[in-house]
Image (cartoon, rainbow, N blue to C red; front, side, top):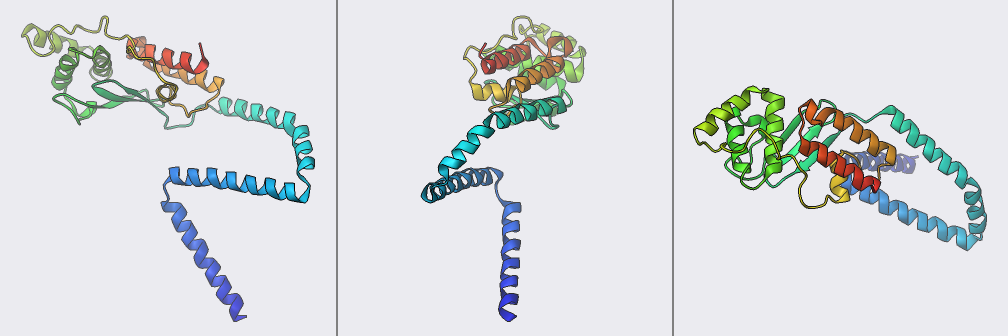
Length: 247
């Protein structure tokens, strides 16, 4: 009786400690643990079946079930696609001067400045005058950042900022000569990697064709130049889709 009680208390303490570790653990560390633990368990099961002589029967059963499992995967992918994107998805874009995030749910742009006079500050934190100055600093060597700053100004401050930029340019300020956006929206010279393409579309690596096309279509509706985006955004979205679909 006493031994059973002690065993029960030990098990309870063990469960509490395990739950506490689970709540505080790094999700990436847990994912790695699950991955390698699953691999070890699979190897152990295969060895056990081999030793007991049951492996051939299992292989035959899996072969018979394979068409059903493949069809089940296709059905699951179709249901996931019909359910639409999960909330909270964001796309990431990086240029020499900016790190930008595009919120899929709201279409909102946000980001941080990576260098120059406003390094370390966010675009939301800058005034119209400061954004125009940032635009002028980027113009010397980073036309992609110019396009993003202009798109951010258009979305958050409307067309009025262009009048202020014109006044500053007329006075020979830092925004002089940058223009209102013509020719600044092309994609960067280096080819995008697959990892970058997934990040631009806000997808997890390995997303299927339907998810890639859906994400591209949804983002183009929100960040197309006609919707307050820019040619640069559109080019990056198209490039990401082409890379992931092998176009």
